[in-house]
Image 1 (cartoon, rainbow, N blue to C red):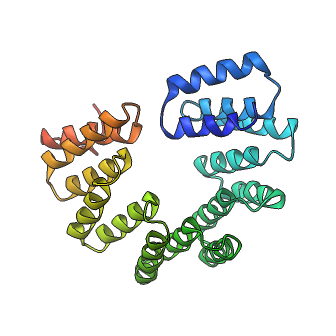
Image 2 (cartoon, one colour; image 1 turned 180 degrees about the vertical axis):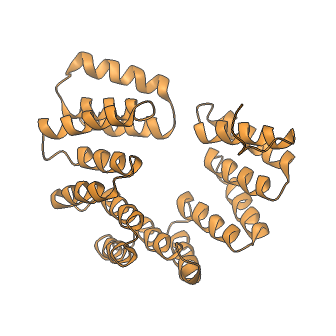
Length: 260
């Protein structure tokens, strides 16, 4: 049962709800009272009912108030429910137990949601000091700088440093592509993403390329990449939603228009 809650979270991130459903069923059969089971249930319910998912995250901490994943899950759910103030408390609770990258990431997101940019930058820099030579910590500092147009040049340097440190870090590549797009460098974004695709067949790269192509009205190219993403991961919700939106665009329908 140990770390099975982490596996449940990974399945949720991959939108593989068939495997997640089976995992939750098995964990309930083995020991429904374990904190890992509560977290797996929270991951399962997050898509359908975030408040119900939150009750399971809270239950995991009643079972074991030193279960770090419980604090992380609770913090992320509070962010989804637009309660960044409560999320700060959750992620700090995780940090008191262990300096975990996810707690730093959550704190940064919460502070940014609260428009506390200085606190977000301080937290990201602290993560970089604690996690020396961590590409993910470098990206976190870049994420804070990328929030404002005046900080984009600094953000670019941090993203590029993260990629030099860990060339296979797709998160930094995707963030750098977003930065290129924000500054009107769509061609650079496409070249970067296509370079990564030659080495890694990853659905997130296809989705990002599809989004860039769709934004520049290259709809057939966007369609091809959404379809490629779904061939790699048929469960990918972002690809499904993006494809649905794109199909409306290709029919000349405003994808943002309300349904009749």
